Image 1 (spheres, rainbow, N blue to C red):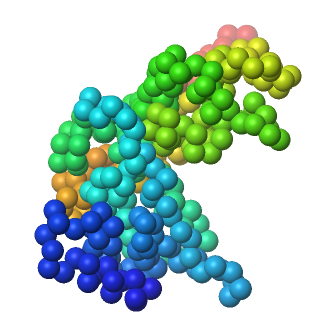
Image 2: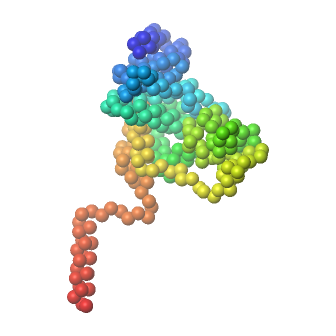
Length: 314
């Protein structure tokens, strides 16, 4: 670990940013890292110490940032890897280190860091679609729109995944459908890992992309098996909105972007109170509001009096 940190610091020494390679820029993030449980690796990845690993097991969880994508937008016609944007990958690394500093060592800590990484990758996909090319361009209303979209339709709605996938399938039809549906043991049943990313530039994982199997199979022209026919015949509409706890966790992770070193952070808190906002946005529209102590007492009193009068009249 010390060797990698020294290499990173050496890479950032006398050179100006515009003359450094992307890998040198990435390793240069080491100057901002103070926590001992995270280390940078070549090829845009970082290691997280496994605090519960046995001596005969690997001691680190490796997180690959090259697995994440940015979609086409108003300027770029093709998907590109998230690692093409140094400020975005820098934000992910520094936010992960910030999470480690704020969290005690536990069996779930690395899982939370991995969740943070995936969440921020989707967040950058979201702002990229909106033609925000750096964190300084993000507006407060962008966060409000994101929270409402997540509550209503999850990342699927916020990232317009169905619309983007529909357009791609309309253009490439059966050829693309063959790439997006599984073969072999789970033939025509699943969306393979890493299928959606290179196609439409999304960071929706394969298990999340399973809701699009019917859409994909509608463009599949070869013979269908019984499992595929059942998917096409199904009238089920998957629920895509986030539940309260997931929405709260997602908003809290995005909040870690506050006050990271420039140009990796934002200068205002994205979500002032993630818990209250998640409660508000996920509350059923027909739900009765919570009553205060005075109102509840008054209702109980009226009910008692009404019952007493009815008893007396009989």
